Length: 426
Image (cartoon, rainbow, N blue to C red; front, top):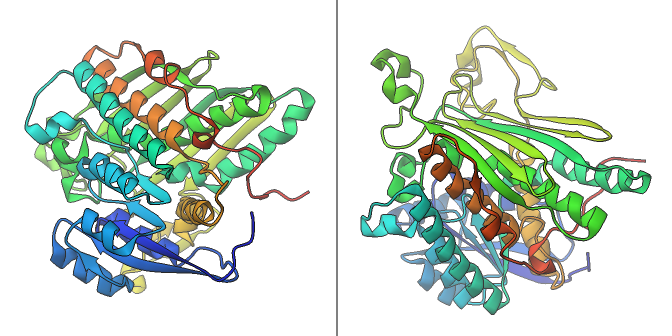
């Protein structure tokens, strides 16, 4: 990366919930860059009071009533869209209109625009209209010259970065074909109050949990294709189920969970890529023991298993859970009592620090492009929206090639396998 000197980057955040909170914290943890300062210059929320309290808690310079006002006043280098999903499309367009250099868009990308008008439609219609709306948003970004970083943190975990390094190495030996990928994201229910409201969240476990392991699955196939043939490998078909499990059970079954009344709490998606290889991805709100993030890759040269959280590299036994007070050993862990597997530097383990460091690098270096960019966001949304269509049609495979293979992205929207930090030593 080109060296930047005496540079100050202004950063704005929309959203003061869980995503906004970790975003503010993560910028404090980005590795030091000589001569560069990161200023949390503005925050906005649906309620000004929430933004003001957030600003005080995270030392943000100023709270704003609206996203548009914040952009006009601060003129940020990085705008982090970490609010409820229903506002994502609007805020992307506003950031593009303001020519923000780097737009960081939290997952999932956007939701069906018809929710905002209290409309009803089948999943196929929702898919088409959502992709049309996202196409318009991405067109605005491309026209403005802004860079869009799709903030799928699991695409940024160290294991995925290391796997990219391995793929580069084995290609020299005529290897590097990814044959099967499998991943899971699960816990006891979302942090977000809006999660159980489809018009704000866009859906449940399929939309908001499966999107996590889907990110690295799509990313690594992009990387594989670029390394070997100079073009990414894209998804073309999706089969999925989306169920409401706890809602159908006796009241006592939901004692340890957030029971969803309006969205799915279990989902499975099978993604078929254009080279005939599959990925099997799970998301659910039924994990009674805390968060579960894992990802596995089987290739023609070996298998890489990423036990992101929990893993057994750290083990702690507590006969009395109250001894550690409010220390979080692992996200969503209901009790620290007994044997637990703490996750030190959790924001690092989950890829958040790598993700926001990529945003900083993209703001500092004009030619740098996000590793997780517009193409990953687009393909993710196509898979998720087609997933709900498949679930309505008894898990039938839905062809999405018109969306994926039918929309070209230039190199700026694709990952660069050569621009990966060296994490495995020689």
